[in-house]
Image (tube, rainbow, N blue to C red; front, top):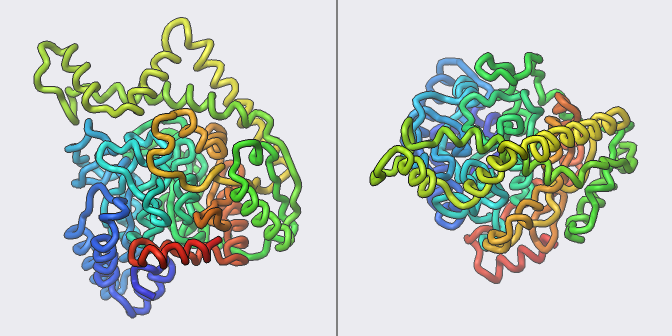
Length: 500
């Protein structure tokens, strides 16, 4: 096995036994990025000198007898999370040259654990999108088929992990932006409970929905990363005061007697037949492992999409008002007065999707429409949360598909916003309810990965990780790797046929 193919926990074992060094591991990842990222385009900013220096310091710490939960592990960071001294663009021209002077809380905690930062990954502009096509710089490609999207908005992070360009990565999830790209790229992605991970230093999209989460090669790595980044932060007024458990202790293959609900609304019209087949087979595996499976209902699921696309744009409208060309970021230079400067800065600095959502949100919040749209959406949000609350009185977890389809072609949905928004139909409700959910590989459809979504109640990460780990250990799907371009086209087609 090549060093860049290691999981985080495998690499930690080798590092602790002094069989490899952090510098060797980091260099292997940097070489891998050079080899494949021209095709994948996962990274906006690479930090090779910084990464190698951090790796050298990690090796020095280990020689001195010190250790850390992630000492010497090379990671990638979605470019909406502040990393001091490195550009944080949010995939937008308006922040193209912005360099934050401070670290996000999650970065501080990863630094303390000894992690190495390879660079910042591509994202839909301000995390608004489901395909990473809305990045102002370039589109990231899916490692399983470079003609297809990796999902979004954390598509760069998901593609980097899937293509072995990082051992793990951080993303952000506002309506499915960790889980959906994890599904489309064949890796594991976890959206923690709202408030479980600090949002300090995460550039805001929709403040009541945003949550930072890990993207990894397997469930064990997700548990390791979550343990490091979770916990109360006084700088985030929404973060929970609850203690952080050792999530790896929840990773047991025994799930006999656990109650698993299958929401019938997640198998509605529009789901790709091959996706449904793979997910149904995964549910049968859980039954074979001894779980008690029963159908349930989340009756307000059909309202999650319109509810989300009122609340999220309304919050985005308020959050993005700060980008006015005065304090930081891009500023139009040829304006006659301050009002023209505002208009030109936002006209040229923001892309089409961001403008669309700002206009939607501003309209929903405007006088005469607030009660009819935004306030009503908040009431429906409560109903959606109550659906989940009732379900978790009967079941330990809920399972279903993460995405209704496998990865679609680049350009296929970019001109039809509604079809693009429907890509997140199975993930939006979890953000509205503030609960945790995880996506992991469960098979293939047309040679492309399918994701199984496992969701739990607020602060239910341990039970979600337990079920995910049991399924992962009973199946081979997490061991499959994309062929990338190091195979000839004929070999690529043969590999694709094998995955069917």
